[in-house]
Image (cartoon, rainbow, N blue to C red):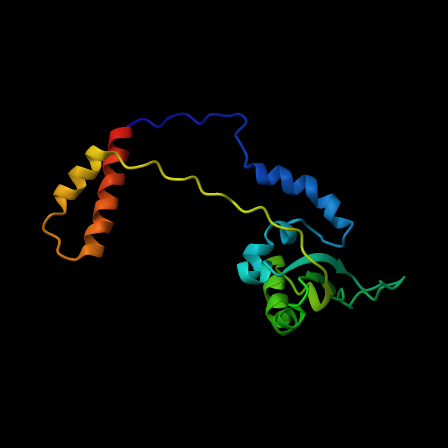
Length: 172
C-alpha cells in the first residue's frame, strides 16, 4: 500500500482569519482587544439578548504610571447599547452576560456593565428562498408509496419527504 507524497504549497484559509486580523486594529480604538466579541456577539450571549443589546466599547481603568509588578490588570467595564425599554431586563441579565463574555475571552476581562439606552441599527433579515413546486410525477409516486398509512399528518409528512427524496435523486 503506497502513501501519496505530501504536497507543499499554499493552502486556502478561511476568510474569517483575514477579516478578523484586519478588523482588530479598528476595534482596538473602542477598547476591544479583538473583534471576536463584536463579530460573535449573538453566539456569546444568545439570540434573545443580542436582539435587544449590542456591545459599544470596553472602558479600561486608568493605569498607574509605575504599576506594581504583583498587581494584576484591573477588569474593564463593558458599555452596552440597549434598545429603549429593555434596560431593566439587561440589568438583571448583567451577571450572566459578564460570565459569558469572560468565558469567551478566556479571562476575567469584564467586571461591570454600563447601559446606554439607544435604538440599535435595524438588522437585515435573511430571506429564505422559496422551495420549487413539487414535481407532479414525484408527488404521485410518493402518494402511492404511503397508501397504507392511516394517520393523515404522518402521511402528509411522508409524502413531502418522498417528493424531496425523489427530486434529489433525479438531480444526482
